Image (cartoon, rainbow over all chains, first blue to last red; front, side, top):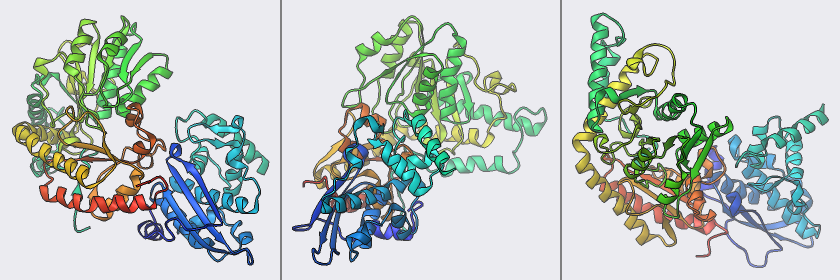
Length: 192
Length: 386
């Protein structure tokens, strides 16, 4: 199956925790049909222990999107929300034994869903998605400047193609690629 | 993999045994350079001319009108850029939004270089508006480039009629016939198409061999500049094995085309009927009565194409998707987008493309596993409202 690891393949062929639960504590969706992939994540959180006692997902997307979501649920069940919020897309990639470069955005979608769910649980607005529209850099996939900057920093990205692989930004019509390059240069110069 | 069911013949095809056998001597003793003066060269040169006749015979053309190229993409680039160079005062091109990237991306690049390009749209069945086409041709239109049949949907454009219209306006007409060649009849003696591209590996010749048909007396400049090969039309030492291969493949296609069209159409329709009967909420894309016999482009609501492909592949079935994930672009197929197919259906598309090597048993096996695959993925999908 192409360049997928055995673990990705296993999670894709036998996804864990698929479906919809009754009475979830939180229920969120990220991505959209326009983007070509979407993830609905439900968590059941024990109010006493603050532990995630169950997780369910549904995904519309390619093989690695399904595998990333399946892995995510396995990773967070049993964690407290303070532990879970520390899970990043890099952890998902590591858990899966690697993802092809052009599929890394699938793991970012997993992280987005998890963070959105925990923010919702805590009652803190999850800003990234509701960023004002002047800050949307990639119009094809609705990717904000804030998200591009965060992903560049978090993953030490070095090229515009990395940014596209991680966020999808620039992967549609490509007209925002010069802007992404400018953002990348700024971020790289910050790091020295 | 024990079982190989190859339903991706619009991507590439298996090299026919007859083609392989025809090529083998040219990988052994008959390695000459067709331009050499000695007898080994002469042997190679005569093999090239024999192949040229075989290609010409398939499309009912004169062998002098056949130029061998390195691939279909080269043929498309040769045709369009060769005409633009020959008519420097004409700065307008007419094409469609559903062309293969070899034409589409080329025309976008030419636009960036300052040419004017009209990109014609299609309707929800993938068909052109002929009036819109007529009105798009201008006095300064150097070339019209419109594909014969679409690689994703198999939709056939009325190129004979389109070429006649271009001719009346004094414009050169090129068609990318890469998907049409060997699948439907091409008769260059009964149309006014000036330039036509063909690629060998789409019909059981090896990869790396293309043809550009150039109608006699067409004014065109060269793309590749260098030696005098191909009567000065295309520089570069001839791809002898490829040329012998495409010649043999054309011979086979001509011999068997009539029966093959009937056979492949029957298999394709069996697959189509089976899918429609067994799986709810599907859409067959492209005008049903104006398609290549071998192509079936079908969208499954609520699922994403790549995940379907991966599960099919687990069962030994090779198909393809025009959708985001496999093509390098993250956007859904430009063809389905132009047809205004909804995003859900554009992302959920699978293209099955058959060849003479497929069997009824393979189609039935595919139909026995596909419904379960779609059901499994729909269960995972947040967009499936069953």
